[in-house]
Length: 324
Ligand code: AFP
Image (cartoon, rainbow, N blue to C red):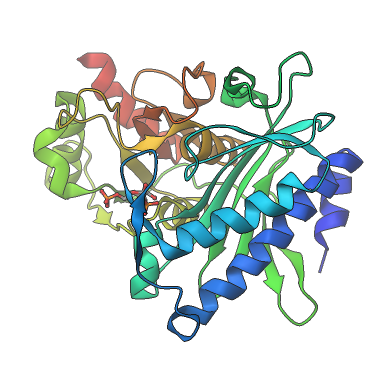
């Protein structure tokens, strides 16, 4: 099987980016080990602190964040990092060429039930004219990502990543500690009969999403003319992994609960990297109104509505938004 390095070289990835990716993955391998220790290492459960989003942090959120922060800060390749678990940007090496945004442990509430969790990351060039701790450096649209991906800590530890030349899946071979290519150039199936959305929020959604989901639920008797199935992992990494493997539509749409929050998911370290992977695999990613990758960010912790997955199904959903 092909090794990570070989795939990255074939994809035309510059040496310094390869070294950065390998450094980041060293951190993910350590997280994978810590996660697998679970209750034996006393890493489950919550801390007493909250992150900038006002969410109670899990012990594994804090541990994972620290592991990635330490390794990237010392690497020399990274000018600054921004994390879901950090209020502000953290300056690293003044000469570093790259910026890394990450969610150290997406879906961390799943850790207590031994279910899917993962690390999501996005890498961009660092503008050299801005100071390392200047958050403006990060305010670039998702189209500017030079690499994005996630590491899924499931029954096997998998890396799914794109450097702009297709989306590839890798599996961690724990016998020698390296990631091996197990699916090259993933293509999301065009059509689907599966959707992923938190149905308990239905009453808060906008009209177009209400109408679209009602038509899915109507099944073969409704306007879509087929029966749909629903799945919800409650960790974006898990749901997007399923979309990439067998198609489907994933949505965390805008809802009216808190007008200050345009959806739940964060642009820089959730929506953008997943949209990049999805589009590199022939899928589509939108807010309902705009392509996610075209959004000009205003804040490193900005939230956006997310609709992504099989192109045919996302387009069908977007028709409801156009009509409204
Ligand atoms: P955490 O990283 O705080 O656990 O949140 C996970 C997440 O942001 C995303 O990965 C899921 O798709 C979504 O939340 C699940 O949200 P619900 O709580 O509404 O199911």
